[in-house]
Image (cartoon, rainbow, N blue to C red; front, side, top):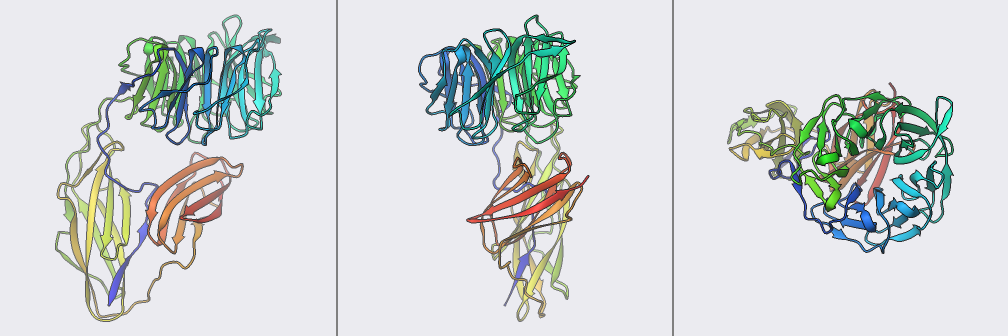
Length: 536
């Protein structure tokens, strides 16, 4: 009796779960339940999203923006901003001092405040407890309200925008906080100038870090953790900060008045604005590419990308646009290719140490769009052990470790390979293949499954990568997350069901600052963690 125990390595952070369908190209206009102008859209990291607009219009989706429904929140004035967290919490705000709060993904709302002689234009909900809304008070000062208890109570604040020794009035049009203390806001100055102000004490004090000739309307940070922030406004003004808002430099003008922007990382982002313009950048705003808008020239006022591919834009007349391709035209899937080695029905013998060094190989898949192609390799033995690999090469080598109790034995190994361009995935044209591994009459030490759940890494401290080893004594639905010492999630990877054994994951901290991070694994009902130290 004998069996082959395959090493289980997950190369990088990609695990093939299923073959994807072809993506629909470009932006598509979604059926809207309203003709009221829409001003803002936001999503949590689950399929729930919200959009707001004129006459206290609130729209809700629970399928990543495919369908939308109107939520009854009573009569009211225009809502200018909505902000969600990663759970069920959201805040919406607008004219007449409106602040609306929900802890049910937007299905029901509580009116926290209305009827004040102030106008809010911006919102950011940092966490379940902490949120901020900002705008302008009755004497035209920048004004804001801050909560630390889910809008059960709030603290108001106001300030002047200092420039050349003078305090200037204006309205805050956008706000984004990086943590509970550090945030930036864009201000439309009363005389038509634009400014960016920064706080490091939760809004108690504000310092002017930018002054320009045109009003600013929006500000955001990259979804992936980095030091990059972006602001935009009238006359195509686009600004970039790489030091958490301390200094700002001008990117390439976007060619239209900008009202909304969204960035998934420090390089990839979108802006929307006057005349229905949609523009995309892949280099952090150094250059821009126009994207087609099927709704025509209705002004777009808000945009939010859930992933690098899935995004929603909203605007005047109740327009809702959606893309599943990053706004790019229809994607051409990778071209046909074939498995080459090991040949089907071939016999591969194990050596004296019961190791069979297998050279997997396949032909090249050409991509008509010149997208970078990766190959997803999956290998199964008859005991259900599974091996997943991701590579950009057309060859891959691995060793299959064998355990033998008595006698010669033969095992059938099945393998498949797919090519993906990040949007579409195609299988090798000759489908699944198999080969056999013969084990000699020899005995080797048995390598059992781990007896306990554990998470370790090497090297530690590291710079900039380390390998996380996840040991599972039993199969289970598994998720890996990494947090900063302040509790901010910097990575999450859902692997689906992983088999019992050891799984290895490469964690890349190239875009993170030095410090202590906590890696945490949830496997079934088990929870376990490990401290990481990044030293640069």
